[in-house]
Amino acid sequence: MSPRPPDGSTSRRSFLAASAALAATAGGMASTRGGAGSRDRARVIDCHAHLHHRSRPSWEAEDLALIDAADRLGIDQLCCSLLTPKRPATADGFRECNNWVRDAMKRHPGRVLGYCYVNPGVGAEAVDEVRRCVGDLGFVGVKLYNEYFCDDPIVFPVIEAAVELGAVILHHAGHAHHPLPGQPFISDGGRIAALASRYPEAKLLCAHVCGGGDWEWTIKALRHAPTVHLDTSGSVPDDGVVEAAVRTLGADRVVFGCDMSMTNGVGRIRGAEISDDDRVKILGGNITRLLEGVRR
Image: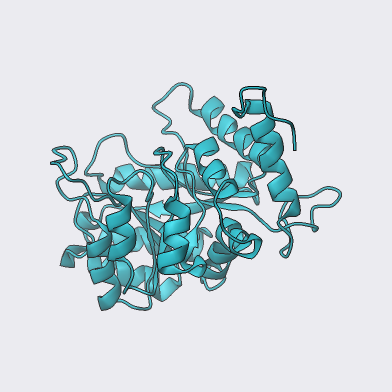
């Protein structure tokens, strides 16, 4: 590991070197990346990433920057969705986004894994899109945002289609102590737990515990929802989140993600006071287990 600067802070160089060292020593599973020694360490998978909408002139460079950041930080695969700039999304809007994700999967084979984004409010077209993306195009999961609370009955047909296909369901979530006018239907851990009680066979990921408000509340809300996994992503750099999640939920239910906060995402796992075995589970073992049953 590179030495720290004299003031004890962590430089970018030392952070990247330490992250690469972590990836290199987290043994036990085969890497999907080629090259010498690639089978000597565990596969690292970011369960929560986003590609960039092509209305942005810089989309291609930004997508390449995401892959470059993953390379530098020792991340083998990125589970990616692409959301419409304006929501609620139309069926034409989310189909276009999902087609672009499919294109990224082709341009970066083995690196980009696709999540199918849909708005359940459009009804049968959302279900058909899940079947097209997962069943026909090789996507691994479904991305749901905040068009509706996750336990609204209008969402249930999408959940049922994902369950039938064995797909992971990543649900945007947060628990705030103040109003969020822009997200009146944001789900929290309690609602996701309620959804899990209705569909215990669903592979639910509660998104960005480090970017969704009160993370302590969220972790506690999921205690009695054993089929829900918690995604560690987000831009909030609070200490102790990963340790609290492992202590309360168990390491088997905690999944590594960045949600584009790449160094934060890697740093909180690298710096967590947990066992090496738990770190390997979180970095890739748990999401790999969830992805094994996807019927593509």
